[in-house]
Length: 277
Ligand SMILES: Nc1ncnc2c1ncn2[C@@H]1O[C@H](COP(=O)(O)OP(=O)(O)OP(=O)(O)O)[C@@H](O)[C@H]1O
Ligand SMILES: [Mg+2]
Image (tube, rainbow, N blue to C red; front, side, top):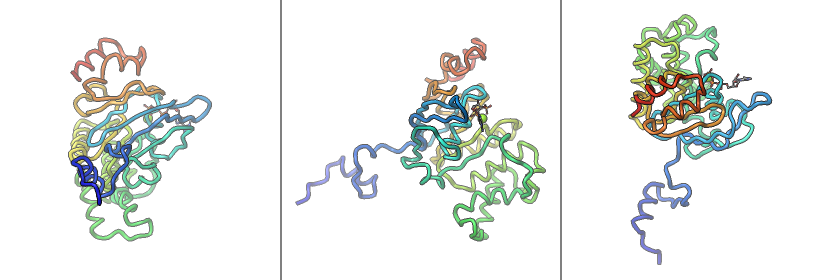
């Protein structure tokens, strides 16, 4: 005779679709977890033995000075650059098996803006994973691409060449492509770099909406004055992990000082951290 279900096992079965999960897999899986991640382009590591756990349904800021390894961390997490050592897990699975759950907006300086393609084509690239490279995009998918452009206020530019847009407009288009991917984890490398206040507002509104839909948003961010307003969680890095946690407890003068060294004046840091309290 089978043992009766206890409240505990009933709850476990309910959340695992009927399969009893081992204790180690019961906790909700982190959208992005890295352990002991080391990446090196030459002799000196760009990031060294980094651990991180970015939370679900939250906006996380990756903060640190130029050259701290922020972009490297994102690229290594995506698996687009090789890691020397360490583990990356996306929603509890290896990154190779979770690519269709991740949308990535690269740092603007790293994109070749001269490639001859239109704005709507760029956004539709976000949909190819669903139909396959040789698949034809259905009318519904084209409409979806247009809707994503509309969400970032770029519908009027659908047939413009991407290289003929301003920097801020290009940034909006790449966000539209990320939206078209309908991912669960959004990784954005400096989404607000060089954009005007209206574009920044438009982008943050879209990101907050993604969070409200239950997505995890991770953005490299340089403007320390908006961290407390935009983000829930912060990760400070300078080659090594400096600190990670909720903004209210982690975005402190001590941690900023540790990340930036003497490069930020103490009064400025106290002011910024005051924003978080
Ligand atoms: N392709 C590469 N080849 C060699 N070194 C590289 C390469 N990409 C980055 N680096 C080096 O690795 C270190 C980390 O670079 P990374 O781009 O990750 O920094 P970052 O924190 O994103 O900086 P920024 O704020 O300027 O964007 C830097 O010292 C950089 O010079
Ligand atoms: Mg960078």
